[in-house]
Length: 488
Image: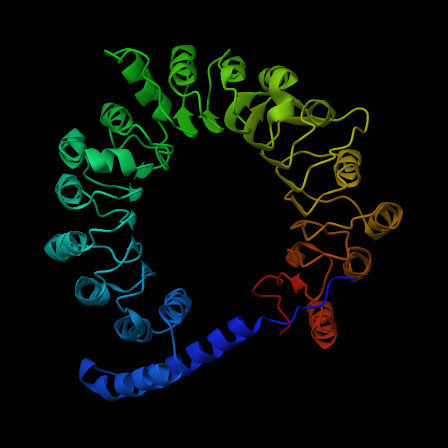
């Protein structure tokens, strides 16, 4: 039977109660002039109850993350709780009229922050002076997220006022060039040593030139990740072929590259001995075989690749791989061969398989997460993948499920699915409420089941089953029927 809902920790219940009380109080405030008395009352109450900075931090995060709330409530919560001991702030999404107010508040009350995420407050040109003031105030900032905001002047200002930043997110469409990168890092040796993660650029677009990104790689000796940039290999190849310092190595653990050729891949393997995760799109023939030279590699993500090249690679290094994320394959993908070569595989995600096959039913002994969209799976192949994965926790199949209630019943009664926590079959027209009940009965950890709009499952079935789940305190979410089919 699916597990029972656990008793919530007292801390979580109390936090939720206090947050609701605060929301109720602040909902009565309509203008800045009305805020003094409620603030005094709430502050006095918190002080008498011995509230600590950790409590302020938790309440603030809980309310700011509730984007369904009126923005005035979230703003006044920030105004009330952004105390000097609050270290981390993520504003969440605010409407345009609040941008200046939020920035002014952070500039005034957020001087002790060590982590600031402004995603959702899009700073405009006339408001950049406030951002400069915030950066100037936050000398101990270790994480700064300002996507779609940065330009060369912002980078220069960061370099002038920050020495301990470890994570910098300046991703998205921005006006960043070599001038800004050089201005940020030149003359600031402490910052060049501390920065380890820089999110820059936009996925799939070279909106920042790879030669400019190459400057980042060369000047940041402890850089481990260039998140959101899709041409890291191209930047590394530029370094490798343009006066590369003797014995130059990076500490990059993740590399993403598009249309990778053999020369680029050789530069990657030569300059990045610490790579653990690699994402390659449209590799030339022979590129995948060079991945065998990456000794710490354990996660591979590929797009538009040849299946036979992947199989050849995994014959050599499959024992190291724990995650495969694959899309738009060409050729025949053999699941049995993957099970034989990747005995430590924990997660397999596949979008768009041209041809899927299996032979002997070799088990995936460590597979926990399995997701296939447009996989052209035969019923026998699906049965093999389900029954041959004893540790399976999450199963998502986007193709039409051709199994019926009897097929599922035979599997569920013959095999044990003791670890299954989530199963999603968005297109299963032959499955009914009988399979829902049987899954609940035979899977002791099942907590998520959907998407039932693709099942032979009526709104009445949904309403009845939800009533049963509620009355028995069962910890199971039935993902809803389509918005025009819901019965409650």
